[in-house]
Length: 315
Length: 299
Image (cartoon, rainbow over all chains, first blue to last red; front, side, top):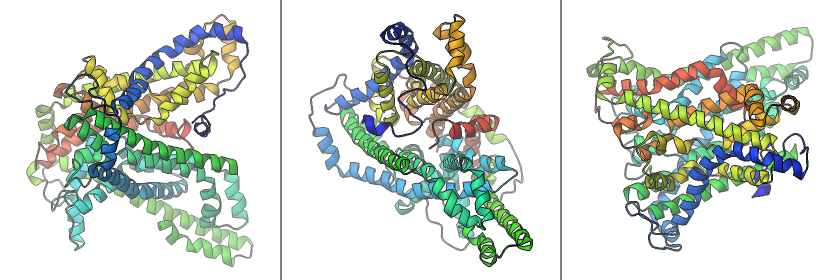
């Protein structure tokens, strides 16, 4: 763990300058250090570390929401049940399917828009506004607006499709279309974040590289392919991994727009946890499902760290 | 894709080029044309991106009966729907809840994280590494997997259905500690050494030297914790069931469907729910964007 986590370059174990004193210094700064750390650490242990450990313990018990205490010891029963449950695997698959549907457009469109915006001299604020504004909206607002847009026959999208002579599907009501519709909404909602990350990455590409290549006769397309894209590789890795993790954690859109339906076709992993924990009152089992889900997210983070390391060693 | 379509011109220039000023001018003109195409494509998409919001606003200004007309034109503009929503729902209470809990979460995050980061950046103590790794582990845990134990924990101390339950778990934010620590590490130590020479204690150095120099980090962390907390749905949905204490996202999620086919009312509630954060965004646009670009989030 220790070796893999240190990969992101913004996190360094050692600050700028070396310790100025020896053991004597340490003891003198120990008390103020404790005072400075106490408020954060207290809340951190209480609300992050504590619940994480409590959840892990709970996952080995038949804990119920409506009974106090941990309940009967379950051993690995909860895990075995989750891994053997088709509902759990379906929920996991829906989450992965949603991730597959949303990640490519959210990365590629953000990159293309950022590349285009780089060539704009005036009015950049307008593009930032248009693409980023949806990102700050609460999921419930996004859901209300898009439910109206997706309304069969009356909604804006159905009308537009009908106007072109095609038959609009029942967007959120058709099991084959519901997830696609949620993906479209999500792309609209969260694209701005990736767009801004790419804009920031583009600022780090040295100007003189473009100038030098222009003198050598390189056109814009060549510049993008030979200079910009290779230099954006690290940003792209970051965007992809942040996006995959965010997509895996999807809950809000499904919960509000489809309640996991129709016919459970859009129930995500987190909603499964929510359902078994708070509708079925099976807290212990829900904790086991959370832990399995956590391992999935952890695996994705690990892949990112390995990739960042490799990119760093290449540079 | 649009990019591909608009490139051949520039590409041809390069191939046929043999040098000379005439060519340079033509390349220049082609490049300008190319750039103009880029702007056109980008503008088209930007307008497309604004359509859903514009449509919601448009619908909200129509009388309910006219919302099913397939037109952008508002024949009888009215604010009736806004009045209905303000009168019939608890939305004013939700504003208050959202505002109080998000402001407290942002304030708590800025204070606790910056203090912890100061200790990690400036002070020497025995368990510094342990603390550092402990906080680092927090980056790996998605808050969403903690909802079940957090719910039981707060239930056991009878804090559910209070504002405390909503904002307290959102205060400790590992990423904020790293953003501050990274920023503090970049501030020259000579400055706080000088303050210490003048007899200032650690706390005064933190409050009067380091923090005032860290405005970009403070505003980035404050704005982001505020927005994240404001938009959080899953946790407040569990923590609060009393309609008067609900936050905007939870309240809107519970009333969805209650207006049925009164689409203007539904859209008015959506617009009202969006309004505060749209204002925050318009006020702090630069800071938000710089915050994403300039703090720990960049690759």
